[in-house]
Length: 296
Image 1 (cartoon, rainbow, N blue to C red):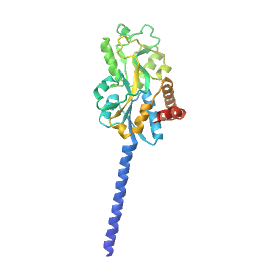
Image 2 (cartoon, rainbow, N blue to C red):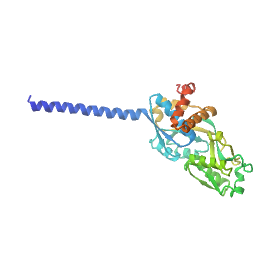
Image 3 (cartoon, rainbow, N blue to C red):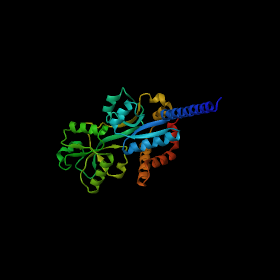
């Protein structure tokens, strides 16, 4: 064999090895993304931040990677239907998210299992507004509120239900969208000045332990009565991740557990830490409960 041919042969073998290694690495990376990364939808609501970070801690301790996607509810539903998102951890029925359920029930795997069964939604006012106790009291006091209901994220099921409530009670009010943090700030500022404000809110929420608020009676039951919180997954998720699918079905929280989790996350944020720090603390202190969820 000539020197030149020998060099060519060596270079050829080396190139094949490099390409094989690159191909193997790419395939392994793709498998990792397909098999181990869970894409979870997140909404900037206090309880949603708490439970999404809790599940991130749990799943990553079990060897999965978790990526959050901060999206409004409507975008999350479309992403689940299009296989662009794996899981939504907070879906309210029978009233708040009924429109999304009706639209996507054939395209999304909505769980029959409930992880929180004592949820409530309605309009709230500060407790010092003694003469405002029912939604039916609003129209005759509309100037007091400047004909406005202070809202949060457009596209949220509760915002849609609030619009339905305005129509059902023929209220001369406008629902003004913003974000949950902006809405809570507006409520806090109104209470500080003892001014009137009305807004849609829900339990579970830590705001009720921080501010003296009351729900307005809803004689027409537009907001429903007790709401139940489910999770939703893209079609095929249960086949791809049967272990996680079972864990989510086992997941149950009561007033104490969700309240303590939200408080832990809030304390972390108040200390200048990320929400995940509070979730990590709560998970560490509640291993017995978590072990129940992770059972077969």
